Image 1: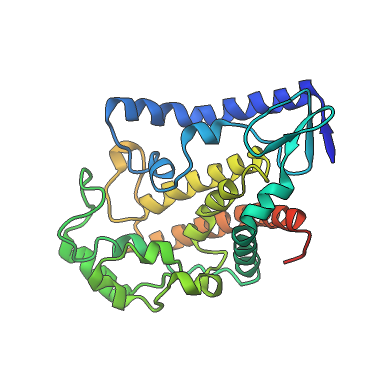
Image 2: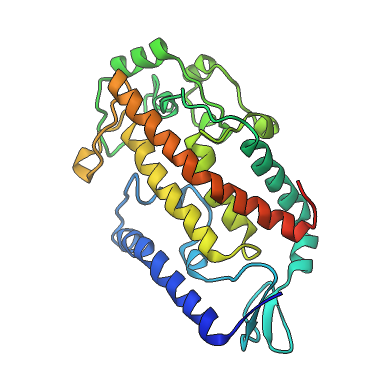
Amino acid sequence: MEILGPEEWRGRAEAHRRRVGAWLAPHLERRRRGEKHPVEDFLFTYYSYRPNRLQQWHPGAHVELVGAREYGRDYVDTERGATVDVDGLVERRRASIEWTAALLSRTASRPAQFGCFGMHEWAMVYRAPEVRHEAWPMRLPADAIAGIVEERGVRCSHYDAFRFFTGPARPLNVLQPARETQHELEQPGCLHANMDLYKWAYKLSPLVPSELVADCFALARDIRAVDMRASPYDLERLGYPPIRIETAEGRAEYAALQRDFSRRAEPLRRRLLASCEAVLGVSV
């Protein structure tokens, strides 16, 4: 059990609130005004973690906070303060933690693939009468977008991206991902698999430290920007110059960014898996 004195844990909690507050404030202001941002708001709308929960700080499992009695839900008091109720949480969430640990482990065990070039976003608007971000124009006419999808094909291994493909686009994908095959298909070069580290981090909270959740959020935020820059949407006036994956130069730029995200994701995935193993008491 790691022991944190009041000054140390309160300092960490305040540093976390300041860090995530810089991300939260613009989103909450846009929400107050009824505005939407296709890049910056995605992590708050697609994922289910509410802003107030992201802002709350947790030390993670096996840490005692001196002087922190009645710290909150999923905590138990100790003689000196409070600590996460690891036994109670694992009893209630064991199946979910084991599922997540297996996904993290199997994804990490595979070689990274960098040949998809972000075509999943194109498949989401392929021959579609309506698109998700209807307030923003496309960089190319609908027929040109369809032609590029048909010429290049789609190589998406991520189920939660694939499920947003248009009906006509699904047969063009070389794989047909399903929730049941997620453990067999996810690989560490996938932008969405690396973005989802944020989801696994907050689903494991408060068993993982909030600094790790925030690290995963920061990565996911950067990935989302590249995801939309490589899409057929024109977001240049929002400050997102396009990555023209319809060209050889654009595909090379995308693959280089994809490799960098894969490198950044690797230690985060390893830390999340180690947290799962620590509370489960097993090596996955």
